[in-house]
Length: 374
Ligand SMILES: [Zn+2]
Image (cartoon, rainbow, N blue to C red):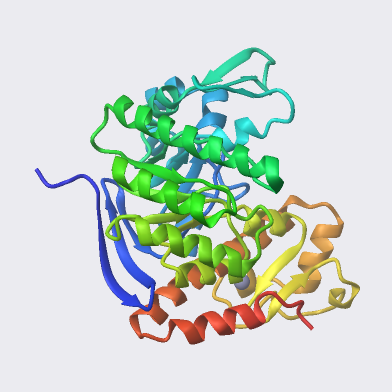
């Protein structure tokens, strides 16, 4: 029987790489961006619209779905694919990050994370084993181990960072042993904060445990872009080169092309949809803030030349009006555009890698996309 999942690298340009991840629910061209569907939906956007925007894989949060409606409900309704009607690949995050960041109420010990449910206040525990069981019940194609993520700053932070990194390794080993499904890939997570030696040690040990893919956790918490590139690079020196690499939860267009240049294959970030709800649009020439008075009677589409359904029909002036009037259509239309922008960024990155001109493409994105539209 052929393997249910596989990852094949097709082209490289420096450390940047393009490939294809095959799953039982379809293929994903990498580098890929995963729109965030925490509860099984990207806010205000339907599965058909996501596919039309170029999405090939979505991300859901196992912990949030465990709370509501419960993985047993999802499993009885056909798993994530049947329940949500997004029939393509799904990645689930374990939710460890969300749980450990519940201010004040979470306690982490060797067994797992104990916390008060934000839904009904009852005591809950997430362990490396239950995180795997929940994700197996949800039926995602790619699952993540439970990890411990602490902000590692200062002297005390360094010691905590090392302890959390080492615990993450012990949890990763337990997660591996807890696996029951062969049609789901499990990713290990590299931790170690902003300490290059810790991240190298974490990557080496996680790689030696042996996972189907590897994620970088705990980045985007204040380190600068150059430091992040170095942290990704040292981890990549240690990780098995043939496995997919995922940078969790980050970030801006310039962050994405930077990480692609370091050899990352998968991304997710709430930024395109969160910015959209606040009236901030990504464009090739910089950020467009719809609340700015100068768009009051601007008849141009958000980004001239964009092939999204919003830019095809609607003006900046109309979107600005919807936003100010509190119409939910504003966030929906802005999300369609921003998601298309991110997904096009990935398609353009793949093409640039194929043509061995990724450095030039990355420089162009870094120069323009972070600016304010003038
Ligand atoms: Zn557009």
